[in-house]
Image (tube, rainbow over all chains, first blue to last red; front, side, top):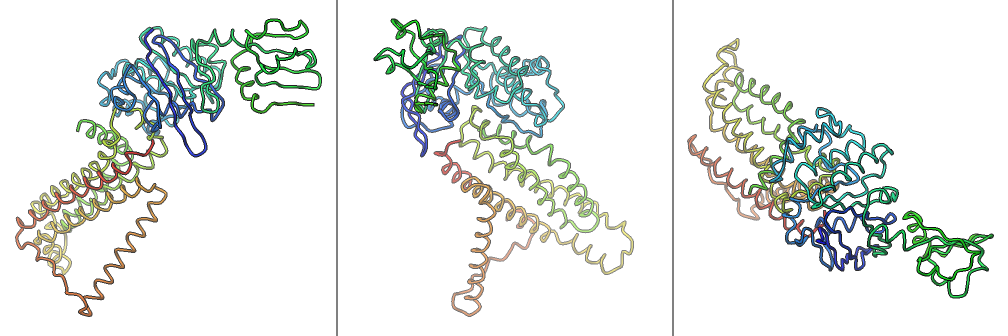
Length: 289
Length: 238
């Protein structure tokens, strides 16, 4: 499979935070959910892909091109949706279109206005007065109007109501029907990832905790529950995010470590949300009496 | 170059809805006044060019343009350079507009239709219409001063941050004033030789040549400030 995005050994250090050896790749024709708690490094990684942040080491390839030296060619073919609007808020959709079209060789005004109509966006109202959902749709319309082959979305659904979230996810699902495209979708709302992502990369404290298919992730981890005294010796070390209560415990465990556990311990498939929560608990070693 | 032109167009379209009305009002008002009372008044139209420049940074901050600049297929240096050329172009076009208004004002001589043609005020008006050199000097002088000032403010704002811009401008004005005072004081007390500026051209054509030279110098200053700013910002993250 040809990768539309490839990151190898990305390192970037700030005073209080660092991305450490981040590596993952997104094959063409798929959606990747890029998840992690706030401050895990998702936005920094996206900024590095866009060459908005200077990287310390590593290599980022988009469409097989280098993200630093070929940044202009990449951006011609890239659509980006941020968590907030990046367009002049006092202008209307028509004026925004006038502003942006000279920058893209493949800009298609007809496509833009048909998307605007499809998304029910008024073309004579200031875009600053749009709701958050409408702003997201406008950014998607911009991305689609210059035939972006890869769309990167940074927390697009945070702050959106369920209907607007659903609409946005539908748009992405429709977009990816063309198998030469790709979507990298950063979010901490894992329900969105469960719904549309094919691949998942989990970032935790600036490091990649998991990268691979969504199905493999959910099949590889389970939540285990029961009484603490029923835990066989040597198993506890394999727990992730062990969480003890007065009447028992719960923890995340790799499914290949479930063999031979006593019947008194219950296990069930872990959701992405649970996986994220247990990863976060891992460092806290929570114990509640 | 195409990128720079696109960014200049982008800046113009950003400022246009907010500035065009004010610009038209200023041009019409000062145009009529200059045609009736003195072509000198047309020079003040240059001040209106600031309404095409000043709102830009506020809009950029409010609308998160740093993100847009990060995703547009344009080199960062082009974005920086374009802003300085935009400042020059706005001032230059305003200057050209003033020149046209001055020509019309001088050709039409509408003051002839004003009452009290023999009054003292009317004598001053007539003198003003006759003195083309002074009119041109005002036009070129205000253009030069404002264009350099705005370019300088843009450079300082982009390098040191908008929040520090006012402080920096105040310090700069303070330092220049202090130096000017020191220079005047020292030359008046014969402590340093007085530097005499070369005489201004006597003819209108000489004044136009001087104006053209000033325009070229101001263009060079804008390019220089743009280059300094682009170099300073090149390594910074968006």
